[in-house]
Image 1 (cartoon, rainbow, N blue to C red):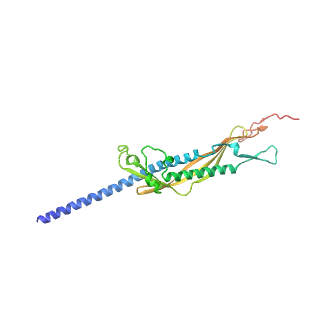
Image 2: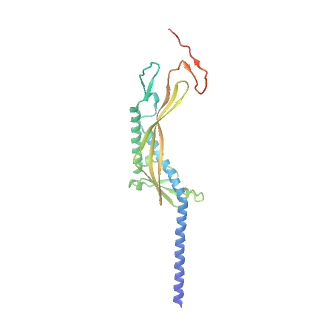
Image 3: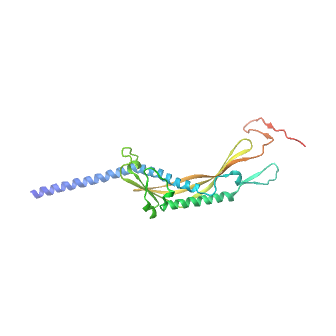
Length: 248
């Protein structure tokens, strides 16, 4: 009789323990599914901070700074003596583009290999140099309370690992902006648009993201000759201003 009672108690205890384990697992799964979007969003924000810092440091290390736009514009002869045709000097632009792209790629690779001089010193972020030197990308830890946006925990709780690495090569293209400025003048800005694709990895999830940056190459005014007759454009009849022209 005692043996049956002890066996029955043992079965009840086993059932209770098994139920608690299942409840804990389900609770953790539920918490993880609820907090995962927050983890990924936080990881993406921190990743873009780190990657943007590395890109900016590479840009500042360039030998060529921001040029005057007139240094990259060439005047071409045209059929009319009053008309001037201009074009961008693609050789200079492509040289700056190639130099910038190569430096950004080099700095990102050095950061992935554990070079902390290329990484920002962010608050509550701890880098794992050993993992980075092993080729696992850029790895850092953040407190659970901060990653989950839980004010009550603050900087307490276990640290959540966040890892990201560069996917593919750094891509770039040249963009130009031309805006009318005054009479027959134009404000011209030529820039390089950089895109770095990264894979962000947190426990039980991953996400692809793109870090974008515009780097100015040349900025300035392109001044044309003042016309003898100027109208403001628009619909309908517009008043015009005629500038006296001296005759020989």
